[in-house]
Length: 588
Image 1 (cartoon, rainbow, N blue to C red):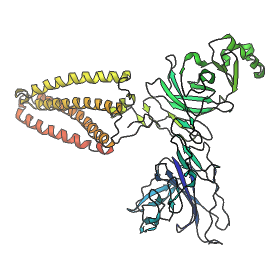
Image 2 (cartoon, rainbow, N blue to C red; image 1 turned 120 degrees about the vertical axis):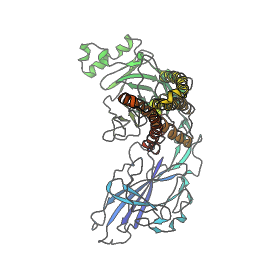
Image 3 (cartoon, rainbow, N blue to C red; image 1 turned 90 degrees about the vertical axis):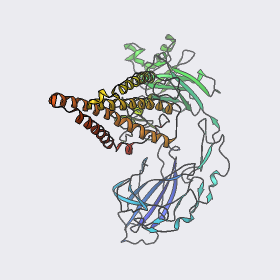
Image 4 (cartoon, rainbow, N blue to C red; image 1 turned 90 degrees about the horizontal axis):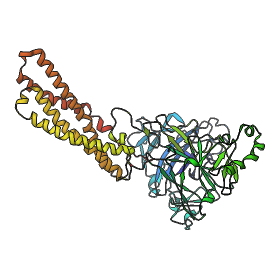
């Protein structure tokens, strides 16, 4: 995903005096690049009694000819008497639009807030509508090519990737020649920022400026002696570069392996698990031309601290004097793979010699003041100053990309309780799913016959001479329907998660109907049981004055009333149900 920024200079009549467009691609830059933009007034000298401001609008663009509005910023120009005014900005593009509840924009506009101004808002107009409140119909947008966006009908066309010009009809010259190999996609970039005016978006198996190099795949398996963490922190060291490449990989529940794609073959790979380093691989352990490498995280590959290897006499030495003894551990302990001290990490090669490299152990991975994780999740990022990736470590009973899914609470659906434990491999399910299958099957095999026998019992005339018989008959019928529906829901969830059903309309309709029925049916059963207890109390209190006919009539009326009240009390539930994409598990 790339972003196109529109930087405009406007006056107090919202008239665009000058503007500039540029393309920003987050994947390309680990650190935020600097853009130098010059906006000019339309008259010289400028009108002093007018108010001027800078407005920046961000649009997300993709290789699929998609252009979508994202956010806007408002920056005031306070000193209009100055001939030049410099504004230095550090912008953060939000993940979603910042909406507001103002209704002045009418039916042809949408109220949106500025990212940096909580009290200011503006109206984002539909095509062919303009004005401060989107009240003026116009035809200025007819010249913009299909797939482009006419920006607030100011005769500014926001072009998709590969197109340029005032009306987005000119193909970009950067991608006219087929420069990307192996089915890579060429993306034109802003020529003012880079020496190269294009970038190749490569398939997962390739990398390089032209997608010319095959990625190496490292399959990492966890041994039973190592506790599997929710997130594995990986250091990939490429010599002779000084800093390692830091990667985060989430390990799914009940999985003991993961695949790691790297741009090239690193000299050494370390994993950090529970504040302990593990040597995952060395370059001399595999053939250089091999693209698929299998390795394992074992307890014997743990890198101990130098404190565990040397006596107190050597530990008291100065680091420069102590390093002379670093050859001894690898020579004396044949199973030792690596160790580390305050500033280095050392590996033992095949000749039992020690190779040490500088290593920063004090690196922090917290997300500073910007925590994207919900429900007290711990946010980690790959770099303190220029983060490119972040990940959330969720507390107990929470999961998801940003810990947005919870498995706690009374009124949770079955999806939230066991959905995250279901694997795509149907024949290899975890213990909790297999146990759930057994429990649900036993419940169904016991519940259906017992409820059928109860229905047959209370269908007879004698038990229904009192109101209790009506309540118990109704309760048996509802209980039978509930146990059948619950069993259907359980196996429906298994099938949709194992086979990854993606029909959103079918899933949403099933979610609304099944969850709504499973909500109010148990409530009805509870109320019927309460009615049975209440009638027995009246029977004891009234004794011989208890009227059976009135009891039966009241039971029929109350049964219908209980069903209606239960339905009405939960009528809000279907309108608040929605299906959520779990990006971390790649399923709905």
